[in-house]
Image 1 (cartoon, rainbow, N blue to C red):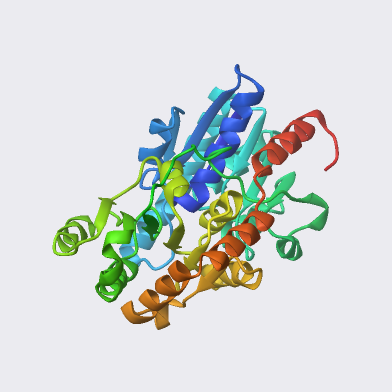
Image 2: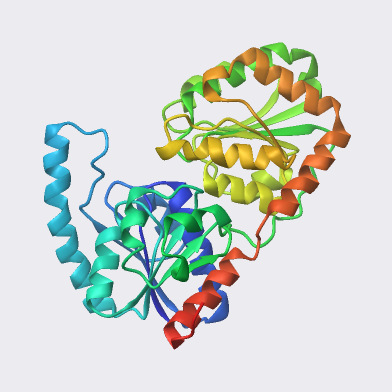
Length: 358
């Protein structure tokens, strides 16, 4: 199989694509896989580290940009289409999978015009603009949630769940300390970082019993690392956690945003969480994601506008003291999980190539 995985921009779009690429490799050691993304997306650093070749397009988003930014973005569209036709012509893929994000559009358009089977993956309940448009061109639409089908041509929709990066978490023993994993997405979350430091001041009496693993994002790394120096907690602080599977394996409780990929990983691995949805996500989809998990008893939700050191500390203390509730939350998370999502998508891609119906 020759496969192009197109799109990215954020970890939420990119990491499910990495999971699908890994599953293709497990099925066929001779599979050739090429990632195509934007010149400014997270894929520039992540994809080479994952061992896959990467081509980039000069395309940029248009949302929230000034006039100069808009002119640059519109210039990038024809240039990206031209480069996409060249990439497709040279690589000759049998299938193209779009991950969402603006970089997936040119590749899928070029692919369809060349008669190649194409699919998209939609991670959120409410799809983004790129996928809403591409849905009318592609052959398959892989969704995470049943409710998402109402936004797409239903005959092309296959509900698979959202793929996760690792088939299993590594067997790591935590020891006696209760471990908190804190992160706000691949770029960090400034408000969560600051409120968590305030929360620790209110949890100082638990310092000897807690371990903190904190992904800060690059912008806050130095200031947060310095702030921990005056606190007595055992900490591991990094701008970006390369071995996130090990961090999940060690975590007793996770404090994080509610992006679709994060939610998929929490539920696949059965991790109880305090979810703080990013309030400016398109269509407020992180709040929808978070509430869906909370309603099943797998998480506690604190809205960003209501977040403070005080209520974050209270939630952490309550869950730390109630291990039975944590166990129930973990069980509820596992019941929501779809760890077989990558396998299902690969099955459907082979069926698509062979001309079989969903």
